[in-house]
Image (cartoon, rainbow, N blue to C red; front, side):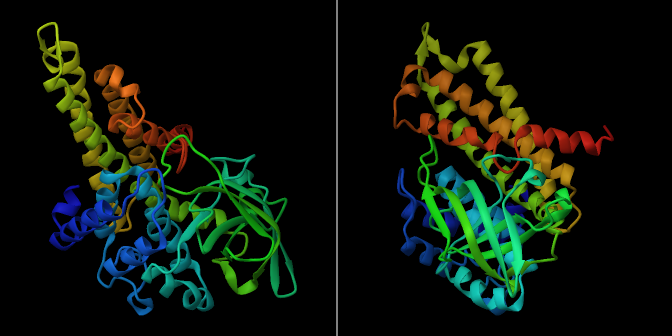
Length: 373
């Protein structure tokens, strides 16, 4: 990333995260708690936490970008499990949490002693956040949450979960609120669910049965959770875009090595014009998408990035990643269909990027809206 290269401290941090990722990554299994503590000692889990609570003083989003790039280069699942905690869920607690929430969770998150998750998606409402049905009803000095969430990254291992729930049933998007929920709360049950890819990242279903949440654990303003989400989702989409590009780079390098070495009809696969032109086309697209994502990182740091720009980055990077992975599978031939080959694993891991953090269709809707359509 250009913005990372232009920040020597961020680049150095990225190299440290790369070594950490190589050391702790376990195929088909989430990293253990010791790895999270190592991440805390490195400063990774405290990137979005203020220094007053033990966070990484002086770190900008360029540091997060460098970290995401390093993690995703090793494994998409490894990147997913760490970024959902330090870069996606934790910022809600920092920006919207009460002093009680800050004191309770931020030091633990910064140290890697706690893991965070974000619970938005429901069985009956995927990318349409305004349609969620999990409800939170106030009674005395608590809210009581009832409902369910699914496809939640870190869902079964998190200690604190940012939960979106409906607080005004008839108000649509204007009736949603966010809560910091202790994962050990009575009435909350969790079940890890199997996925076809990213098995080194925990994914779970959550069930809330009158889960008590103190009034002080409301995040931000009552009934304005949807607006809070709209404020934060662009950063999530840029983070996703950085991971997508890291994956695209690895897939491109794997494929170039393959087509240079593999022979067909007495020539290297890469010298066949169709293959050469297709790879050249994808490489040109990669340069263009990278330039847009780099610009978005700068705008994010300057607080000038629009929702539509984030949507463009996420849409283009996810599609590019999948196009490169798909071509890589094709050009690896029969070996790509063997379980455990790297191109195969990355192809499986990468498919979900066109669905999560807002499906392609939602990104197109946001872009169309920006065009006045």
